[in-house]
Length: 142
Image 1 (cartoon, helix red, strand yellow):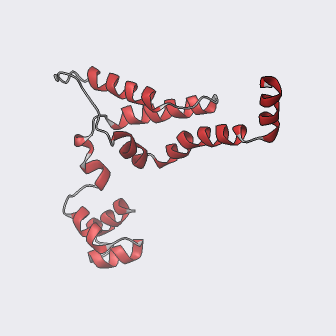
Image 2 (image 1 turned 90 degrees about the horizontal axis):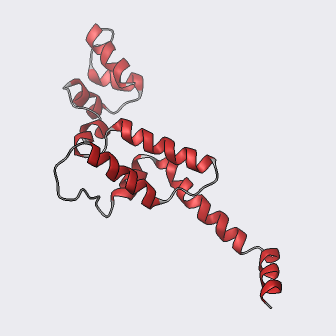
Image 3 (image 1 turned 180 degrees about the vertical axis):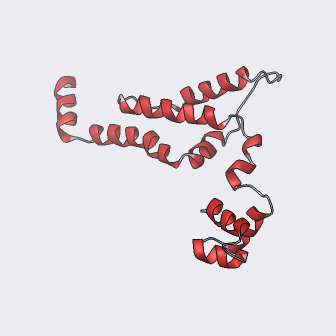
């Protein structure tokens, strides 16, 4: 959307930023800032992240693969993968670490993964509350 609006502004098809924003349904301020050279919010902060976009995509693909096979994607495994990627960057620190909110920020960036982490727990809870399973357990124990 922004690329099309900016191209129309450059080519002269649309005369003003405000009319381009209205035509494409964009915010005027955002289109104005993009025309001045600012990037999008995600791209602007990429250099502050531990991982590159390709590495994050690899982790997202791995989580999807694990979930497709029916295994719960464990947060500890994800953290181990991330620390492995960080070590491969050759960053010279004593011990590369992740902040306490890293996983929640990662899930905010990839909102489709949130359900994959929660779904397994919901299935386990529903299985544990199944009366047939509970009766079977007590029949075996008693």
